[in-house]
Image (cartoon, rainbow, N blue to C red):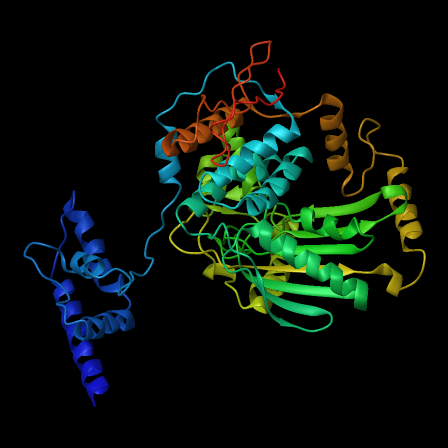
Amino acid sequence: MRTTFLTRTAGLLNHQLESACAGSSFPSSSPSSQQPQKKACISGLEPALTSRFFARCYHARRKPFSGPGVPVVSRLTTSRPGCLRPIATSSTNMNFLAKEKEKFEAPEDLGLKYSKDEILRFMIDCMMAVGTPKPNATSLANVLLAADERGHYSHGMNRLEMYVNDVKQKICEGGATPTIEKESVSTALVNGNNGLGPVVGDFCMELAVKKAKETGIGWVCARGSNHYGIAGWYSMTATKQGLLGMSFTNTSPLVAPTRAKTGALGTNPISLSAPAKGGDSFVLDMATCVVAVGKIEVERRKENPIPEGWALDKEGQPTTDPKEAMFGALMPLGGPETHSGYKGYGLGMLVEIFCGIMSGGHYGPNVRRWMQTDRPADLGQCFVAIDPSFFAPGFEDRMSDLMDHCRNMEPADPSKPVLVAGDPERTHVEKVKKEGGITYHVNQIKDSWKLGKALGGRLGYLRTLPHLLGRSSGSCSRSRFVSPLDDLSSPIKPYPLLCR
């Protein structure tokens, strides 16, 4: 009886609240901005949660709001934290870090080439500075470093700030570990528990590899995950153990389906890695759109135009301006319909089925928008490992034969030999090894320097200026970003730095 009374009373109060909101207005800078704010007053709260809030207030013998001159929604959402949650009606972005970085001016003489160890240390320190445990920070840093080492700069250090921001704002749980919700001898459903994507990905692929070695195939789907870096990292994990590896993930709805003007699917990458003889391997790692959004970000950072056919502006028209592209949509693999863009659209749907649909996570247009930090991403991902020994013998021999045949074909342009998937990345890895470090664009280095300064300076974890891997003007400098876990009583032991 009492519960029924409370439910009815709460419902009535909720109805009165909506009526009051409909007739109210909030302070605004211009009359034109008042209407959306009044609408938000009604739609910005979940009715069920509002009713629950009033019921809890009754039980607690507290008034739901008090005090003159305080907007209704403000009083509700602040009088008892946790009782009432606003619906996410607007997105936030990386304003927190952006504002912090604006306080600093990067030196002009920063070096451009850095050792892999130092890059790894910097990224781990940045993640630990916002509370990420070292093992999880290391998993993330390994994936980002691999992207830069393989020449995919869009998914390396360029992505670091996004992860830092998500963990800092508690949108992603930096310390979370995945859990298995359902499994068979060959399959598993994993909950990433809103953890870092690379932590979830490593867990899932290791599980898939284990099952594949026992049964011939391991198929693992995950939900509750986040951006996991380059898809190839996980497929290559399987190949290092003699298996075929496949990895897929859905992403924010950045890609416009063929004939549409706005995005509904993610870049939804596909990766397949297969072992060949002598340590050789086939490593396919591709987005199902013309280019990943990170490529556009890199060109925007370099202040370069993008090729026509990469993206649409907000009106659905092709654009070569990377800034306009960021407010528009990417084009599916193939580009316009006349160039078979519907095939890329179909591949994007395939990934969505494997990831969001099969895992029960968010899918398609339901995934949060790119760079939003108002709610968890809840990405769906899929990891597959296959043991070729369960099939016809001689897999690696045939794989090498096919790859070598393609490589040895006469090229149409003698200066451009025929390659197979993974060759460009291997070439870049060898280049990094020969040069002794990874070379970055100056704008990337300046931005990362500011990130390190903003994190260390604000949190008080620095004893010296946080020059990203040091400054260089023909000779090495030995400044360093100090980890919050460093022993502050010990003398600084500078890391070896590379110079321009």
